[in-house]
Length: 146
Image (tube, rainbow, N blue to C red; front, top):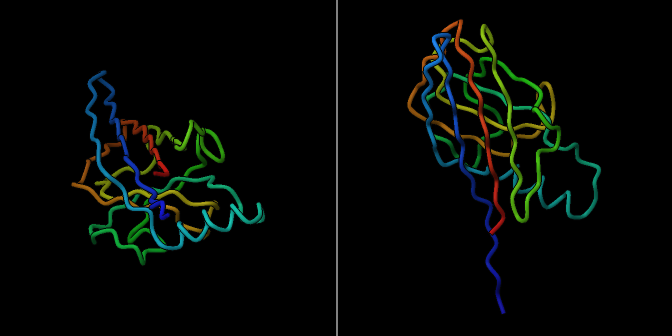
């Protein structure tokens, strides 16, 4: 008997402006091959570092299972909760890019397990979102095993 297994996800980006207005964008993500390999290695042992950072960038090349980095990283921050927040068969990762952090047109995001370099779990590319210097961007990223 075969039981298919996949990792899927969704990224929710909330952009908040200084005047109190907000906009929310919801997009699918791609769990990349090295991210899937990382998941498998964690099932065998816990020697691989947990996912600890989220990066945003300005790259526009479509996400590919072969990706190992963002195309053009703007900045990377520690996750609000290192390792994410598990719930059933899902883990949610979140980060807040405050005013003055990662400004510009943001069109890609990724989850990684190091402050620099590291293993990329997932990458998402989307229509550019302009993050002005006074704006704050909250990203919530849920990966579900199905």
